[in-house]
Image 1 (cartoon, rainbow, N blue to C red):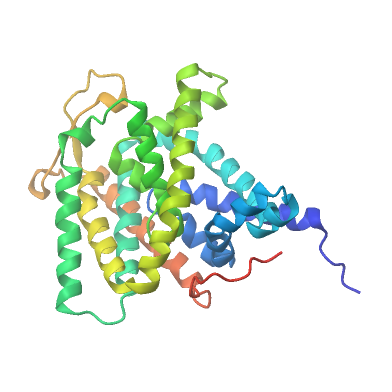
Image 2 (cartoon, helix red, strand yellow):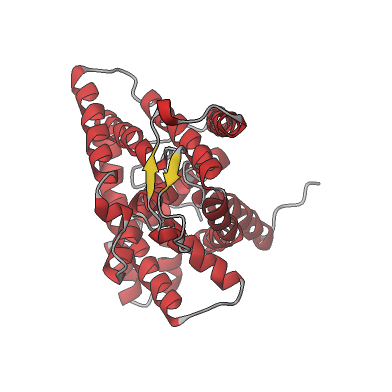
Length: 326
């Protein structure tokens, strides 16, 4: 007789899945949504999030705690959320160190991950039309213009901007193919957030860091609740157009993570204040460092393509208002 899984074992399984998602979420180019898709919990996750609605508010207002918890699949979300947070904390410090001390190789990995992910997003479009080609070009042009703006080179050091980064970055969670960490990288806040994680692990906790985390978390919460329904509607009603714009945005954003950049402020100790100048193909020295950078980018791209092969058989179902699993 096969033992039935207990509640604790189920929670531990969801936490382990969250750990994998959190590890993916902290790496620009690997989407936590993709990992959720591979693990078979994508629809349950998005459905639970979408149930933060009027029905939930009515349950809470009437103090129907059990009904409210069941409506949003609270136990599942808590176990998964614990795992996600653990994964992010576990890898955040490592990513901070890699980006600061091994910038070129780290950007090469990011470049390969994003380039391959943009290809996968393009493959989601079954039939290309002139209109979709226009949208992908428009998305690429818009992203290329955005990432070249001086404001993103030296982003505002203000809490309102941290809140905005949380709102925008969290939306990538429900889009397989793009990661929230990549959005933070584009917005210029990725290194700051991973730095806070590193400081926390070293017990260097400051009031500024706590305030930043609280504001960022508030932005994530607002973005997840507000934009999840909009994104679900776009995917349900205008999926090809949404995917075309998203693919173009990712391609145009590759400029931000071009691995061959020259540090023009070598005396600046703070990474977030450094300025880099892109090298053209003719300016790149062809040496061992070049070939290693190229190899890292190719390996990262292959990793994403292999990860995509693992999702076959786990297609996204229509995200209607289905009954949340209990």
